Length: 134
Figure 1 (tube, rainbow, N blue to C red):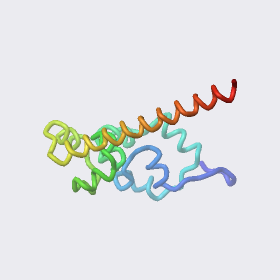
Figure 2 (figure 1 turned 180 degrees about the horizontal axis):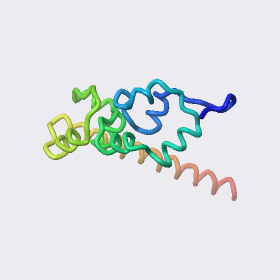
Figure 3 (figure 1 turned 30 degrees about the vertical axis):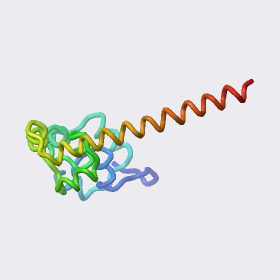
């Protein structure tokens, strides 16, 4: 499946790009070297194990953080160090503990501030463009 000059990736890199938890993948996936063509095929036609991992997990921390709408650091502050399944994430969302409520609020404030800074920079750039064209 691999040609001598095709680029290849380590399983950890592919798992990260696919948004899956590497230890939950089949051993043959963990032991293989994946070419870019193999990676494209996995994306286009995911095998059943990949579809099931995406559907029910366990999910890696970046995916868990995204689904809970918190940062990865917020997960760590909340004591979540391991991968969670979809059912565990759903349970947290249905009955959010105090740390999750606080982290979601913090995450929303950080995102709002980042958007404010971005908007302010855009206004400055637009003003510079107008004055430069006059």
